[in-house]
Image (cartoon, protein in one colour):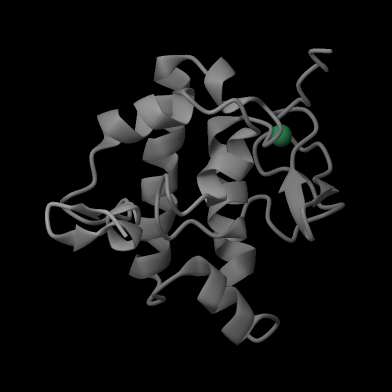
Length: 161
Ligand SMILES: [Zn+2]
């Protein structure tokens, strides 16, 4: 297997997570904008950014007012930058709540804690009002999981073909 700077290629391809000092938002934004794929799929790709699970992605997209089906490459540079900033904020807040990851917290304390009622704006809130505009949060199938979003703040992109 080819090596890059002494690091096996398989390891070199794991991107830093947004809380590591090596994380370079400018490089991530550029890579995100090069992806002709749904922005949520790009976020969950561990080769782009490490550590983003389904919950982080939905919460960051809600904050950025973006539908996960938007094509990553179609985002403006400022919009992509805001999205990455929201991803960072969501992860930092989850850590501040004492978890190592939002997704782990969800699995471990689902139903046993008020954490998610206080902290989640979209994920798992199907049929409940969007905290920003009051429209009812919708759930859509995404790969083998679900995506939660606000129909008003996060309009579905129009089909391009
Ligand atoms: Zn809304």
